[in-house]
Amino acid sequence: MAWTKQQRSVALASYLGWTLDAFDFFLMVFVLKDIAKAFGAEITSVTVAITLTLALRPLGALIFGRLADRYGRRPVLMANIVLFSVLDLASGFATSLTMLLVLRSVFGVAMGGEWGVGSALTMESIPPKSRGVMSGILQAGYPSGYLLASVVFGLLHDSIGWRGMFMIGVLPALLVLFIRRNVPESPSWERGQRAGVRTSIFSVLAREWKLALYMIVLMTAFNFFSHGTQDMYPTFLLVQHKFSTHTVSVIAIIYNIGAIIGGIVFGSLSEKIGRRKAIAIAALIALPVLPLWAFSTGSVPLAIGAFLMQISVQGAWGVIPAHLNEMSPPEVRATFPGLVYQLGNLLASANATIQAGIAHRNGDNYGMAMAIVAGIVAVVISVLISLGREHRGVQIDAGEGSESNVGLGDANIAGAIR
Image (tube, rainbow, N blue to C red):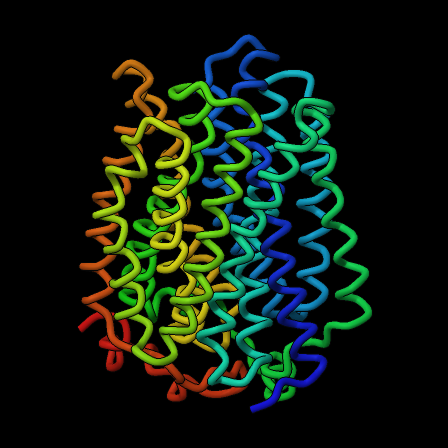
């Protein structure tokens, strides 16, 4: 089925929204050492900013998701993008570590809303058979943002410093101009409005508590997988291997190219072999890659290991936008997938601090700390996903009753867990 011009605009806007959201987040991971030096603190103390950003994301998913379910995906997405952009700019003016922690906490609220709203708008607007490949493209926005942050770090950091990098983070606000002009509202949401659909997220959570619990546990493992292999990697390269800014930037660019490839390949593959099988295969690729990724000594083998690791990590993640939206109750789709995703983020939010603590107690051995987390969660994800049921291709429509979604109700709870 051919895509319309409006569907292509929706897909582009959602991809760029997540790309730029991730860009603003990942600017932080490159300047942990700089911020620690500026405020006379340990790196472990500065990583609390990452923890707070991740921990507050569920609140943003709930707030912006409910607003999008009530007032539409399009206007809420625009407001969300403006907010996280302005907060990134404000971070560059922080006068103390405490002020920075507060700003990154509020940034977490804004960041938490974008994924759920953007993915709902996309999955409700595109042809069903395109969900797999679009899921991979949409999720590739995350490493695309990381890659963009890597380029900015390599080209501009030495000239503008960590404050200047945060100030550049205001540029994503320009995306709102494109959305306002080119992106229509979700047709599914509009049908739901005409049908008079009004559902409380809390009543849905009470009805679907088994489904929600399963999805939260799954997304906790997924967030440990992504943040456990990404957030401390620049610090690992800078502190443990003492590489230059340029070398770290190049390695980060390389592994984010791997992440983009992995997301698109496995997202597309999931349309053929199923969501669960694609996720399990991608996750297990991480195990044989661990030694090269975490324990190599030269920049070239580390870059190769990081490239392969992110094919695994983002390959598994590339299936998630389609999988969560297909599993979710249609009447709260802007809220439910984003909320369970971000609650998983909350439970995994201490990852950077945990890894920094393990490394500090073992002579700044960040490689060991990251390998422990990555190896465990790769196995956990493959087990958890095997407990679920395939939802590929189900009809998703906010205007339909609950019988249209195989994941609804206790009678159909096998849609999440056998």
